[in-house]
Amino acid sequence: MDTRNFIGKKVYVEIDRPLGSRHPQYGNIYPLNYGFVPNTISGDGAEIDAYILGEFEPLEDFEGVVIAVIRRTNDNDDKLVVVREGKTYNEDQIKALTEFQERYFNSKIIF
Image 1 (cartoon, rainbow, N blue to C red):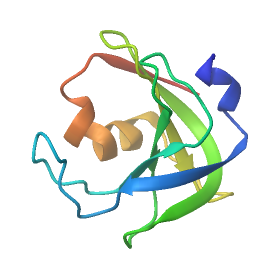
Image 2 (cartoon, rainbow, N blue to C red):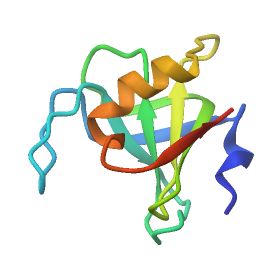
Image 3 (cartoon, helix red, strand yellow):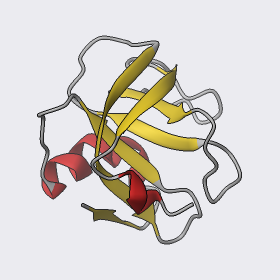
């Protein structure tokens, strides 16, 4: 599935790593809500993951609009960038907010 097709669309995200939680394997803390879009398949065979920007409380789920895709060039696992309708973030802001995890990968942001 080409994740670029999600840009501009509303999606429902189940949050499995809420803001402030710790990664179960690597121990890093999530400074934002992170989850997946149910009933989708990403390049790694799991559901498509999503970063939720602009929400400042831990969430269980979220419905928002995909404003960008983070395409990892050294990993087969794109990430959606999801926000409340009407919110926007530029490339530098998205990079800064997702750096806690994306610093381990080579990636580009697609709008």
